[in-house]
Image (cartoon, rainbow, N blue to C red; front, top):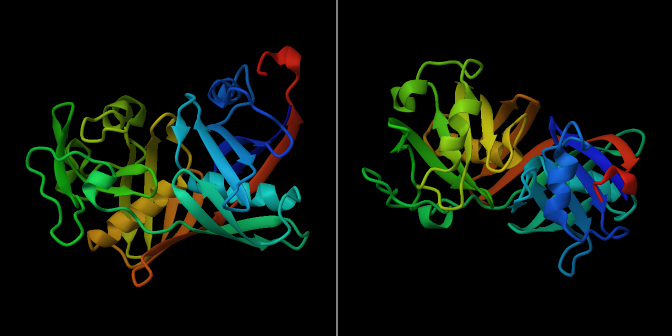
Amino acid sequence: MKFTKMQGIGNDYVYVDCFEEKIEDPSKLAVLVSERHFGIGSDGLILVCPSDVADVRMDMYNLDGSRGEMCGNGIRCVGKFAYDKGIVDKTDITVETLAGIKKLSMHLREDGKVGSVTVDMGAPILQYDKVPAALQDGQSPDAETGALINVPFTVDGNVYHTTAVSMGNPHSVIFLGTAEAGPLAGRSLKEIDLEAIGPDFENHPMFPNRVNTELVNVIDRSHVEMRVWERGSGETLACGTGACAVTVACILNGLTDNEVTVSLLGGDLRIKWDREENVVYMTGPATTVFDGVIAKESGLI
C-alpha cells in the first residue's frame, strides 16, 4: 500500500490516496501506522477519498483509532496532497469533513508545489450544548451567545476556568496569565507536566465527547503561545483547530485583536476571526516528509 507522510508545523499524519487504495479497517490501520517503533510514526491516519459533495473527502483517525471530525493542520496537508498528486487541478478546492465542507486556497511555491494553505474553517460553535459541554456547578452561559466564557470547573480537586469552543471538534481553552488558571496560574508553558494532567482534562464529565485542551499564554494583542493535549492523541506539536479555538477564546475574553499569530511547539499559524462574516481563517504551511510503500510482510496491512 502506498502512503505519504506529511506534517503541518509538526502535526504529522500518514496519508493514503483512496482514489487508488482501499482500506478495510482504517481504525486498526491508524493504530498500527501511528506506532513510532513498529509502524511509520504519526499522530494518526488521514484518508483522501472521493466525495459526492466536494472535490475530495478527508477521513481522519487519531493514533488510538478513534475517528476525528476535523484537523486544521491535517486538512492543509490534504489540500497539498490533492494538488501535488494531481487529484485536483485547481488551487481553490472544497474538502468534505465530518465537521462540514471546508474551503481551501493553496499558495504555490516557485517549483509549482503547494507551500502553504489558507483554510476557511467556518463559524466557531459557541452555544455550549453544541460544543458539546454540560453545565457544571457555578457555570452560567453568556446571555448573548450561549457560550461558556471563562467559567469555573473542577479537575482532580482543583478549580480552573475555561472557555469552551468547537471548531467542528470540542476545545477547552485555559489562560495561564490569570489567577483563574488555578494551580497553573503564573507557571510557564514549558514547566507544565501535560502528560500528567492532560488525561483528566480530556475525560472531564463536562465534555461528553471528550475534549482537546489548550493552555495559553497571551504575549500581546497580536501574539499568543499555546500547548495542546488532543483527545485520542495526547500532546501534539500543533493543532490547527486548537489554534482557531484559542483565537476565538482570546477575542471573547477581550485579550487580543481579531487576527493573531499563534505559536505552537511545532511552529506558527496565522488565525483571523472575521466577526462580520463570522468565519475563522487559518493560514499555515503544509509539508511532505516522504512517500513510501507498506509491505504486506510488515503486518500493518
